[in-house]
Image 1 (cartoon, one colour):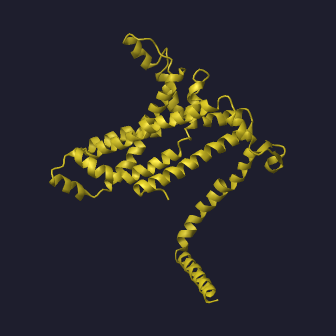
Image 2: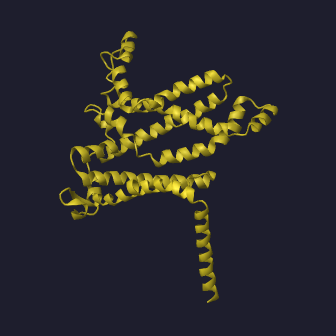
Image 3: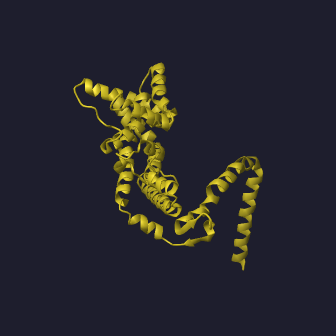
Length: 315
């Protein structure tokens, strides 16, 4: 009886302590309340529609009135003739983007951090960050104009050097390089700002001590800068690996055409084609849910590995 009473008392004390903290900082909770409501209404409440993936959805019957089919839609996707092509295109595109795109902001941030000229440093930052403000439609339009086989400046240079015009936008072999390189050009500036902010948080005394010990710039980068920004690198790497199946839909869809379809057909564009163009809502929802589940598993796995290996993780 005493143990039961003590547990109840302890629970009451905890609850009273929580309410005291809420009452003491009620302004902050009121400030957060609209954001919580926004997420509940627009993020969590629509999740009930996930059941469309397990039904033969008919708009006239509604979600709850449509026939339940279980995992038939998932089995249909797994047995699709182009299943492995879609998976290969999606994974390879994101893995190559990770290999070539992820290190670029780190390298540029480390180099900019070593510059002494503030004006030149700001100029370089502005130049590499400016493409981030270009919309995806404009970016793909620029690619089409610059790489045109008849009027594009790139093909004019190739012909000038004695080569033949290349059908960049219609050749499946060029889809991935163009997608990755244009992504690096557009997104490197934003990532550089994040790493520069992390580098600014490193204690200057560490550099002073390393300089007094005779360490070169390379040694200071290797033993001071990189360890200092390693937690930021790991967090962003976890986000990237956990999102490896979510290739950008807009750019892939805008760059896609009948000639490069074998390389540009990825899960997001496939979901759009099946769900919007062909009105196969249940099937496209199942494909999208499969994609999301893979991302969740990868996020949890990478986060756990990073936590054990480095002690840094999201949760």
